Image 1 (tube, one colour):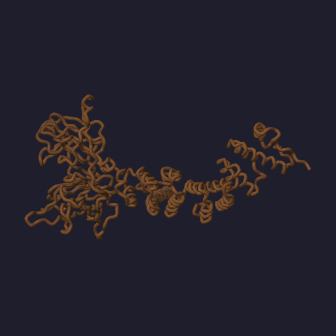
Image 2 (tube, rainbow, N blue to C red):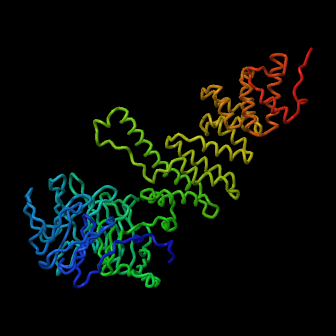
Amino acid sequence: MGEEDYYLELCERPVQFEKANPVNCVFFDEANKQVFAVRSGGATGVVVKGPDDRNPISFRMDDKGEVKCIKFSLENKILAVQRTSKTVVLPEKRSLKLLKSHNLNVNWYMYCPESAVILLSTTVLENVLQPFHFRAGTMSKLPKFEIELPAAPKSTKPSLSERDIAMATIYGQLYVLFLRHHSRTSNSTGAEVVLYHLPREGACKKMHILKLNRTGKFALNVVDNLVVVHHQDTETSVIFDLKLRGEFDGSVTFHHPVLPARSIQPYQIPIAGPAAVTSQSPVPCKLYSSSWIVFQPDIIISASQGYLWNLQVKLEPIVNLLPDKGRLMDFLLQRKECKMVILSVCSQMLSESDRASLPVIATVFDKLNHEYKKYLDAEQSYAMAVEAGQSRSSPLLKRPVRTQAVLDQSDVYTHVLSAFVEKKEMPHKFVIAVLMEYIRSLNQFQIAVQHYLHELVIKTLVQHNLFYMLHQFLQYHVLSDSKPLACLLLSLESFYPPAHQLSLDMLKRLSTANDEIVEVLLSKHQVLAALRFIRGIGGHDNISARKFLDAAKQTEDNMLFYTIFRFFEQRNQRLRGSPNFTPGEHCEEHVAFFKQIFGDQALMRPTTF
């Protein structure tokens, strides 16, 4: 299996700690994501390391017996050590105050630090769960709920094991995940993960079932809003995405793995030590080891090897494992680091070897522009709220965050379309169809099309002499009116004479000032087009000769300069009876330049009658 096939990997820089052994006990604190290595009950040292800690914390404690649990408070201010089932010791003397108490028979508990919710297992079957939410020093009781246990033989008493429960936030919602080893329905084989949605207010509700289609030992992680299920027996993992369409039976949505099961990418453990020793080849890490312990959301710890990893999703291999482009886009658009992968998918579907059909390309563009439009609408709503002064009265008003899923027109133009139109091997009809499909999609979502996309279409049409198609696109307003587009059309008059009138009609519709049009054309070195335009509207007797001669000289095209110079000589003759320029026109340097290039004899002689 090539590296391009693994879609899960362990992070490059794991937290390394002293391996668990008879004198060194290892503990993990899920709230701070810290590993504690406690040697000899703390007497010979405690070392604390976390994923973001550049400097580990080291200290010693008196050995007062076996340590069952050890944790720091948030920001490492207070240390708490548990040595018996009923006592927690704070090494520094502090006074504690009882804020609230509830009397419950508790079998086991689970805490989710991200959402500050604790889950208590109650009743004989252990399957009635009582959640509490902590916020700003208060504890509120949420409605309790029951986990449906699978049917069990009469000889065994069913019960809910702490090992089969996890809590995680997925797409901003808190879920309780229950690993049910046997389906409740007898006709279905294999385990499944049942997701209960735990809202801040209201009752907990069973929402999703993830079908695993196998039995054995499993472990759960959540990475980038994906539920990852590891299977120890086959040493593979699968991923589920709650946002992808599943099968809804009226109350619950059933999901199947997004991709075929794959192993986590093989990982090499580097050999530590002096340079002479490190020249040895790294040791392969035993994946899916029985000594692995999994914590939420994305942590895998190997106590026997002394490593803590964050699990990561690799998006590039998924592109080739998910052939349905629409489903692939739905999947990628929900991922954190998706932008460059999506752009590469777009380029790939427009390549000669992997060319997609137009309906598929249209689907992809629509999915991109749906996200783009959502962001533009959110930005507009925010701007209107700020303008209305709501930001002061509503502190919850936040500027929308631009995620990597927002691909605007400049992204698609720069990374996909501009390179695509240059491909000589592509049939030009397909190229134009793709450009028009993108413009159609933008129009469908009522997104104003940027002029450079229209320019790309026009340049492609002109390149292939498809003037009849250009005429139709303009006539039926397929290409939206804009000043840059009108100027581009003016510049095409020498190739396609009707472009002049099409351009003038567009400028009239835009109510553009004539001098502004001339300025834009001159800035684009379209000197003849500017002159034709000004003649077309009858304003050529009043224009500045110097401005046009300056622009002509800048093009470094001597014949163009000659043409413009001769035009103004003829104008001077017609208006004043002499071809010479008056001192007020400040054209002396241009007359000198003309003589230098073409000689005195090329100057026009006054005509007399």
